[in-house]
Image 1: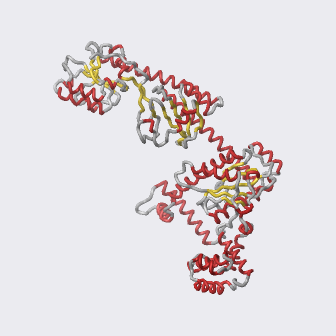
Image 2: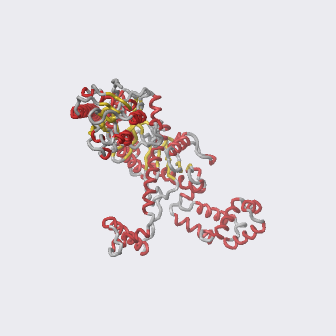
Image 3: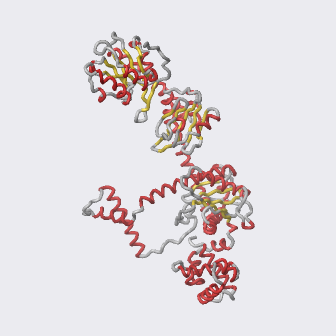
Length: 636
């Protein structure tokens, strides 16, 4: 069988286990070398595309222990001259170890190859090459290895040239879009950079190609033909290439090249890897700049809401540099994640409302000292390890700390999840607010997102209905954006202040919005949206600056019913609440509570013995109603 030269095609390559590119020659290209002009392909034509990256000579019968993947194995058959029967399984053994091909010289030690060996090579697509007798192995080794090195040098030189060009773009002030445009021009394909949530950061090429690339899923790359392969390193097929964009151990997304015609060459993957490195630098720089700008904006907005940013003219002028328009009637909107306790500070960015600190006492001081000892014990345990005999007092302290606080690691995980959720909420609100009011101020504080929006975005909350109009659209859009790609469903509550006409009134408006968030959540549950003017009597109660005074009023008015320790008393308090809600309608109250009429009459008598004749005293009923409202606001 004579070998007919085939088109070598694009450079052959593979991905090493480290993820780096290793180039080589296809078997077809090797057969095109001048030293192999007289060689013949006798089996395995379908395997001409196999990659040759190294050569080896078979000198011992047990060669399988010495071969490596992507090798071209040369032999005269000398090691097998006495055991020709082993030739039948040699092809299968070499193919299973990833070799590229087997080249044999016949005539001196082996006269021919078994028919089963040739048939097996054809079935497996494993090339069997018959070498001419007048060619030395050293000539083949020298030429093929030289061709491989030349190929690698040429590809690396082109890749390095592209890398320098991309770096120069960045040094001259270019961003992701300029980098993508350059790569798309060099490869003559569509290129896109996606973040980890399938959002397009930059793209070049027809819109339909960009949309197609958005369909590449981070956990399942169907186009690879390897379902569930996972994008861990650079990989692809003839119509697309995918390279992760990674910097500092963080996955910032991926860069994808797409050619429906299948024109991508193997060497293009090296160029795309260099582009991914440059893209990672650009993304990191953008994130650093954005973080500094965001902190500066948040700090200034915090000063405004704390009333320490200066006079109105200065605030308006300074905000103009941020693109914020505060020289108009505005309202403050506060969004806060549900399901998390607030802080204890009374400043914007912490809790937003002052909560009394615990009164110093010997018990508190002892607890503080104990916590300090626990921290030292844990640090010592980290440095030196624990002594199983318990002889190291610091190790003993660490063991006590772990026993006293077994959930510390879990709290750390939850803390990271909370920070990620807070960052997503900030991004969602920033996007939603910008779409509806470009002059709005938006910033993320420690536990909440604060936006100052134009008053025309806040509808009249009269009638007790939720605010409608643009602000409602903002909330819905932010909720939709926030819910995207979240592994666990989370909600947030929103509070809206009254309209103010100057920056000096913003601190009070901020307090109103925070109270609307807290009271709204207490009244309506997670995901509540409340306007300060909708709170009714709760708004008046929230204006009492001393929580201790409210708690004292509850205790004086409800007496034993103020506590939650006794289930019977809690049940009686529920009866009192429904009685007051129905304006002392005994029949309706009995129906709501599923009581017999006489049972309810008995309970009313018991309540009057505890609280007084509230069925006859309107002022007492008012006090009881207010006390129950305060209890409903517990924790505020």
